Amino acid sequence: MSRISVMQPWLGEEEVEAVAEVLRSGWVAQGPRVAEFERRFAESQQAAHAVATSSCTTALHLALVVAGIRPGDDVVVPSFSFVATANAAVYVGARPVFADVSPITGNLTPETVRAALTPATSAVVLVDQGGVPADLDAIREVCDPLGIVVIEDAACAAGSTYRGRPVGAGAEIAAWSFHPRKILTTGEGGMLTTSRADWAARARRLREHAMSVSAADRHASLVSPPESYDEVGFNFRMTDMQAAVGIVQLSRLPEVVDRRRELAAVYAKAVAEIDGLRAVTDPAWGTGNFQSFWIEVCPGPGVSTSSTTGASAGFEVGRGTGVSTGSTTGASAGFEVGRGTGVSTGSTTGASAGFDVGRGTGVSTGSTTGASAGFEVGRGTGVSTGSTTGETAGFEVCRGTGVSTSSITGVSAGFEVCRGTGVSTRSSTVSAGGGPAYGMDREGLLGALAEAGISARRGIMAAHRQPAYVSSGVSLPVTEHLTDNTLILPLFHQMSDSEQARVVEVLRQGRR
Image (cartoon, rainbow, N blue to C red; front, side, top):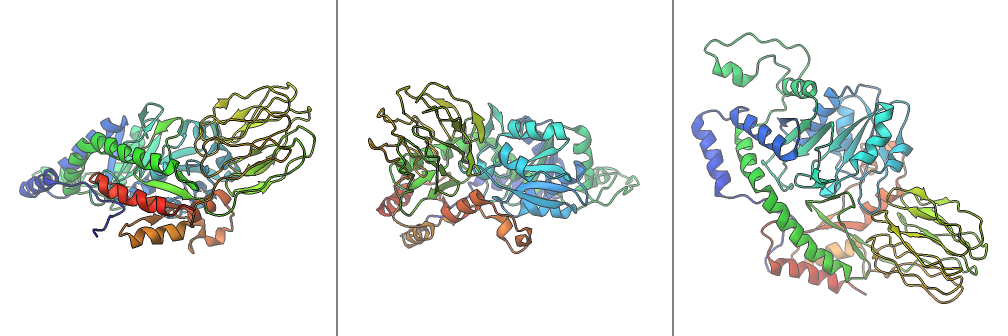
């Protein structure tokens, strides 16, 4: 049985020839190919300026430096990210302050950012986790009035879109990765893009020891001009060999994204039919490149709810535990799902309040007796419900499609946390909730995949749990839940239908 890898870069003879051409030129360090790659990447991402670097980590480091982040500053970062995101803040002497994320996208939200802000906050690093575009505009609405710079960590997001444009197009500054796990690779390498010419010019100097004259310009001169070093710089340069590969890879990006989205659609259809599994999907504001296809594994029994007559129960979706509600006849309570805290509702008989769970903000509902409004949680759009006395709507947490409710007086719908398909209700006075469970936990599924010769990976780390940062002492329930219960399935351009069918079959075998 052949092994199925979690990821394979798509490289061919065009890349081989591009590197050979650089070797024949005699100039292999940073030079004309890097400049060409920068120009083409900026055009592709609709960025004003692009500065190539040796990695995304060094690009993120430079971004913090040119944005003016200093020792003693606080930088809000998601813990649900590779540790390099937090490390970059430490490199400039700042303190990373970990924030929680959306249970749906795995990205920062305005609410989780607000909760992490301090008087010393000077920057927020917004990660497009796994290629899922973060809601940049919403985060900037929080940060811009406070003078807090938003740095987009778009390491995984080449080929993703945000509000009809490439991810990063609206960012003041962003960092990109070309690691072999990414869909556009140069072996190692990164890029900084920015809308500001002054930041781009300084980043170009800093990546090359802060020399006033670049190595390429010195080489082109018969008599090397004198150079000066006005500040302490770094050696963060990309080589022309890497850039040559990147130019070829960039030309393939649309094709690669189309293929990955095609494979992701097959996975999503299969996962939707398996109780206890949830697949990552596009948010309302953009499309992902599916650099990673991650799923949430939801084992264990369904979540029970209150049995008070006519009352409905909300669930803390990040953790999936039952949350008690008031016992007033016909009244139901809404909850802020991203944080899982109770949200008070009106006391009008039979009226309930719905909430936009993806954003966590209160949404007003009509005051008609017995009528309540339900909301599409993954997308945050309104879902209409009937006005029959005592009828309440359940929230479809993970998928965001229409949620049906019962019209029986006093009956309420529970949340189906892991699946997010239509939420069933009971025609009794007892509220029903909880979703069907998968037949094994995340570790069990990883083992089953490995036995079938399939390489998968545990979900994104929780950086605040790592020894380097455990002293932060922060508790991030959604991050911890996703880290403990998600995994990344194999997905790569060359994946065959038969290979994907093998993966899906293992997922199906794990059902109860």
